[in-house]
Length: 293
Image 1 (cartoon, one colour):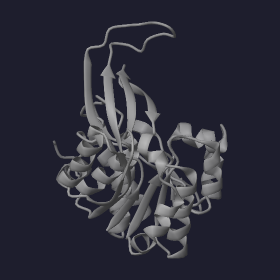
Image 2 (cartoon, one colour):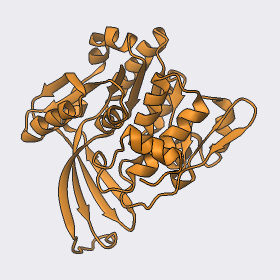
Image 3 (cartoon, helix red, strand yellow):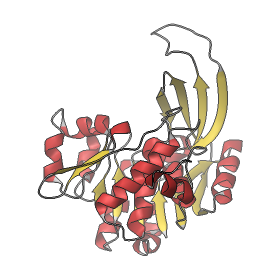
């Protein structure tokens, strides 16, 4: 069982032909809502790939909260550890344009939980095959989650996103750290490639369509990405992390786990929406084999 301790949001998605300039108003051509949040996205990605997944987090008492819980259950995710907090659920305001995205997250219920939740879930964390967490939850909760995993020898994946300087204090607690290039620069500076050697077989930096890289103790290993026709990159990183957790839970070695995660992420960007684009196990296997989808 993979346990995801993370955010659960409703994505409010707007698409426009281009990004507006400062102070400018332009017309968009699409608006939709979709379940999201980095934690929930990662949980869905792992579940779609055949893993048993448990979600730990919070939603509000609003209608979004009802919908978000129902979505998790429909994906076969154990949502018994998701609490209801008075007030609004978290939301992410997502602007899509030019094959890329800009996102503003309002945490809502996600920031009404604290480290006591991790302590209450300690036995669940201890029996997990892998634990995934991110930075859309309060830092004390993320820290305590990682501490419990370390105490019990459970592989933990810290996705340090959104990027924050405070994340540096969490790096030694996590078994694996998975920033993208922007987040790696925020953590380690412009020369972030040098940090790979300081965290051999632990720091995995995603590089978009180029794939991902890590240091194996002797050299930097570049794991190439898979060709994709990008429509929406919103869920790519979350898909990568969910797939990585699924691979680790099955005992896959690091290089092959990263290749598996790259294949899953390449499929995710080819559809609109974070969770809606997350692929099945069969689709990932086909892409890795070089077959047509």
